[in-house]
Amino acid sequence: MRQTFFLTLLAGAFTVLSCESTPRKAEEKQTQTAIVPDAKWWKEAVVYQIYPRSFKDSNGDGVGDLKGIISKLDYVKSLGIDMVWLNPVYSSPNKDNGYDISDYQNIMKEFGTMEDFDIMLKGFHDRNIKVFMDMVLNHCSEEHEWFKSARSSRESPFYNYFHWWPAEKGKPPYRFSIFDEKGDAWEYNKATNSYYLHYFADAQPDLNWENPQLRQEIYKMMRYWLDKGVDGFRLDAIAFCSKDTIFPPLPKEYDGNWPLYYASGPHLHDYMQEMHREVFSKKEIATVAEAMGDVERVMKFVDPERKELNMAYYFEAIDFGYLPKEYKMPDPKGYDFVAWKKIYAKWTDAFAQKGWGTMYLANHDQPRMLTRWGNDSPEFRDVSSKMLTTFILSMRGTPCYYYGDEIGMDNIKFDKVEEYNDIELLTNYAQVKAKGGDLKRFLEGMKISSRDNGRTPMQWDTTLNAGFSTGKPWLKVNPNYVTVNVANQENDPNSILNYFRKMVQLRKKEPALIYGDWKLVDSDNPSVFAYTRELNGKKLLVLLNFKAVNATVNMAGLDLSQAKVLMSNLITPSSVSVSIALKPYEAMILAL
Ligand code: NOJ
Image (tube, rainbow, N blue to C red; front, side, top):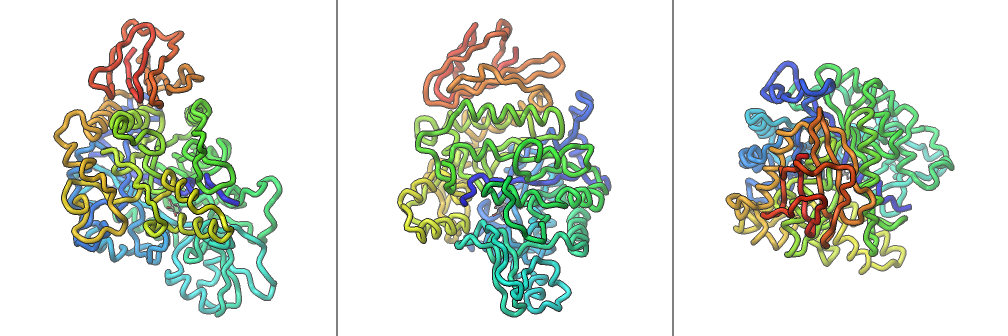
């Protein structure tokens, strides 16, 4: 079956660590800690995600690299953010853009060297910015030494680092694969006369977490990065690491939902607790799980008493609005906005009880937020970008903001399949084609939802290739770079970029935006997402019009008599009286 929500689940888990041995200025940032008892620096931080392949190319090979990032350290600093999440930079043949690691303790050739990495890390730390790494631990690359050895013989010391089904037992029991054209997660390997398991592409063999030796290798490797001084990890697809090695048929309760079953391995939480003991407990740690499923499941990762991870991504909101049983096909009727708000309310309330959440509208597994959740038409791109930024930075949960969104980059909307690079899209295209499906309809849908829309090169200026590279970029640059770029927005006080910077500062200034209670206002309003944030008697009201229409909000029960506008995405905000009429995509934060 198609797993729409599954694909975004992959964006999640990361772990952030503050190193005791190097108490940097970041610790000094804990300005809010006195305000609430369970304050943590990672709850207060704003995360900026850099997709290194697309950020800045320093050597003209068309691929972003670490030296490129180094050349933009001051830009990143200028955003006011506190942490950078780096997508994988380890050695990789790039079948899935770095999510297929062939050497966990080396840097991908296209990205540079370990020396570059060290310089980059120091550069961020010198600027008081923490860095956390993307750790892909459910699987590695078929080119990893472990797998090369394992697949050569059943006698290999690494054979049991992977999951095998010996051919003498017949065909393996069906397992669904996400990036396999046939949808089959078992691949036959002649030298061992056995099948290996791969939940993702066949180039991404799953690691056998049931083997304690493998787990110790992983923990050792994670400690290597910690010793280097990185501030944490994002744990990719970690919910899948434990497997029932009997490989029974899909239990009925999962009703065709393989990913949810995969995220229910018998020892998953034992391993998370072991990882906590072996790696995280050595230093002060903050962790975010890529956790699937309902609140109850996700809570298991983040309930502080369980000592696993302590932050989580959830996917229910980001996966909303696709047609059921189809791969990321947007519902032509749009999405049920009121139901969407209630999803946020449910999760925000849950994290208020236990653990801590994250807030995001985009990442490398998503299209651009402006196209998907805002409006990328010339009339509304500016105002709706700013409205979405207001949303991300005023919600409860650590905000994770994706590179390029700060200048309002939008979907490139490729017409032809040849223009895409992403394994996920290409696999699904091949499947639709094999079934004689409607390819035109598929490609139309992908203009809204495909991952490559969110991976096009950063638009720095109006020079060749948007200033990203002097060579041919690995993925086409969005032609709108001539107007949508950093240089154009730097000196415009009203630009999307400068709005982002102001919103980051407002979040830092107003502890209520971080720790305040969150309460939905006028929940059934069909256009406006309105909520209050309240801490120690200070109450803020956030009003976000998500639609291209004028809208009013029912403020029953709120005292607006003293209301003061703290933030507005319009030069002249709508006036505040007993009721408020908002313009299309208008956003406001009021102090009541
Ligand atoms: C989740 C990552 O976010 C995604 O980009 C990747 O394709 C899968 N995991 C497989 O590692």
